[in-house]
Length: 409
Image 1 (tube, rainbow, N blue to C red):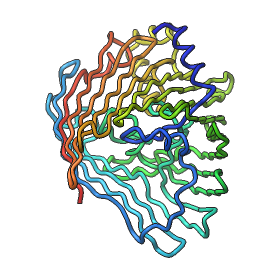
Image 2 (cartoon, rainbow, N blue to C red; image 1 turned 180 degrees about the vertical axis):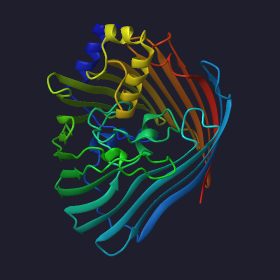
Image 3 (cartoon, rainbow, N blue to C red; image 1 turned 90 degrees about the horizontal axis):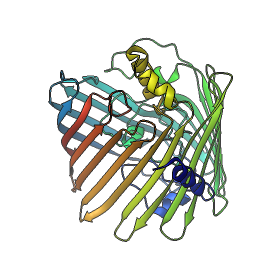
Image 4 (cartoon, helix red, strand yellow; image 1 turned 45 degrees about the vertical axis):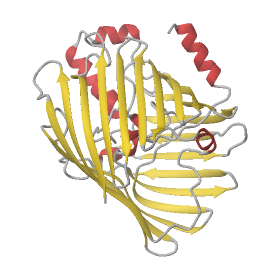
């Protein structure tokens, strides 16, 4: 796609913008446009306790470059999410996942990820205070989220190439969260202190990793049809302040357009912008198609990226830094996606195709998932290709096939 067409797409999607909360399946378009990320919760009285637990077994067969990793690997995962009422106004939330791999193939062999572990006090239907570890997920885009300011050092174990899975299964930040709601709007203030960092084995929660610097985040949501805006102000002690905005809207009965922007002085001097804008269209039969354009002004431009590929040590240091902070490796990328819920009864299909517009490398991920009453069965295929030194061509895992079964209890 030419630069002119890309720019036209980005500009066209900005006037009427929409929201799609991150999840493993694209939501209904009306719900996506009317719901704000981490905004007003449902005030319906919750049961005394609720939650889900599952065990997941996976076998993966991969092709690597260069050779050195075993072609086959196994993973066992245990996951628990729950909520317990201590009193009418006080509730406890927990979400944790443990993964064991054999062999590890470059990932931790065993890792514990605590996404949520906090107490929430809600004196009435207009406000809440929460204290503990919270996985806050801001943003309306589906592949790259500029306003997801708390993602740095949050992903401990990658179990899927789906960005929604990585957002959901990452570790939370230790914080105090204050929320206030009113008719259609919400305000959130997050205070995350700096915790002294010490090396931690992956089998331990690693509570201080997302809290290596003190941070605060203020967000305000006040829907005004046809737009659903959210404004954010973020500050970190070591990296300064950033502004952010999420906008969403519905076009017709089946089209959602959305945009997400963040900007700030990343190195103390120059202003850098990040942007994700896209469109989703739902056809009859629950088939949703989407296109998202992603821009990261903190990443390298074409010339610098090409030059860095000739410096292996600096190249891999930069790649690790961008991956850990949740940024793109290059400045521009396209994401095509298709999700078909109930393609046949109980069968969901998903496809994600990333195309790097700087080095033209690609990633293709396809999943077929059959949903049963007590178990899910899935087959996933991943292919990453490109020239040596490109974003996806340089990754060790060229392609893989993974079969998994998830049993609920």
